[in-house]
Length: 158
Image (cartoon, rainbow, N blue to C red; front, side, top):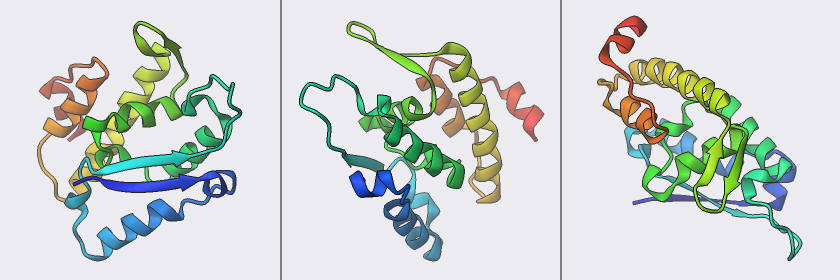
């Protein structure tokens, strides 16, 4: 069951992370971090002019909010609902990209390389700290972006 986090203009313009903090602190308090796995979905209500063609990830204020969020919870990709496209949208908030009408989102390849590797390192350490074993989650995350991580790579991280 997805956990919906609603964001409005006030949250975004004031860099107010409280909608996410409330959810995460509650789960941490109950020591049930695994219940967050692939559960978070962001509902963003941000006013735009009727003729504004930008996607949400192209609006600087929204991107800044997600950068602030990522600095506090760098492990958040673990909790995003990948099936609903939240990981791709979250990545678009942090990685330069362009939209193509036929091919969809096109990330800057070098920036995506750095993002995926950084998240792999962060999540590998975070999973280990939370006694969550196995690398299948990290491999699946990387595969969403077209990367195939080998077990030998993970041996280097241990």
